[in-house]
Image (cartoon, each protein chain N blue to C red):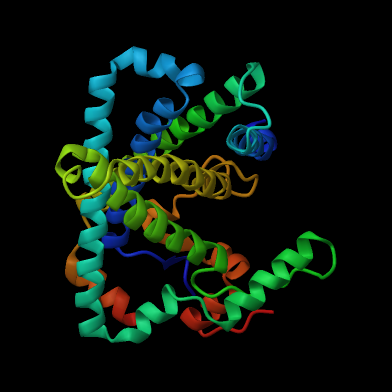
Length: 81
Length: 225
């Protein structure tokens, strides 16, 4: 669902800033919704960054705890590649 | 055969994480001050003094990471030579051709030809936007606004007001550059819910072949049409 409305969401929030900064429309419910939408997208972005970074750290930690993990083995695989 | 191809180093991942987090916090704490009639409720939640404090801490984070990466780049250039940075950061003739082709294909005048190198023209543009707007201009104006009384003896009042206008105006420009980036890496139907490349540092072989064919050919030595 969100992947289908992602483009309009971003477009609306950007157009709102264009409307406000050019002085075409500076007040009203549309502007309030648009600017709050932009802030909501920023908030989602913070959650996504935190989630992605934590997940990759957890994966890295899990890989290092694996019984077959060793730095010498990783180096030799990289050399083979 | 490669399952995953290394795209970003751990250094780049950490720098991106700190810079992105700082930028997002700067937007969340800065934009409401520009539009108090629309976003005043966010300031009321925490309080203006705390919002300003968080904004300055985030600004310090972004400037620190920019200075660190500048020093890293200089040392890296001395050790590895200029070619590496020229290849990844500076636009070349191929990027200009890609830019023209992509825009013509959007207008329906030409068929899209995806032949990107490791970083496409859009990604290079984003890097330069962050360097020029967020780190240099916003950084300098931010430092001046951080303690205006210090600069009041050096700069006239009108200049300080201009600095404030520049800082506010470019914050909107910066947000309008980052929002499409957010769409491309998170909300786009091809990437939803998110692309993990910037966090794991690796990209799948299939994704690399489809999105960065020129770079894929270089890395794997395979020819892909």
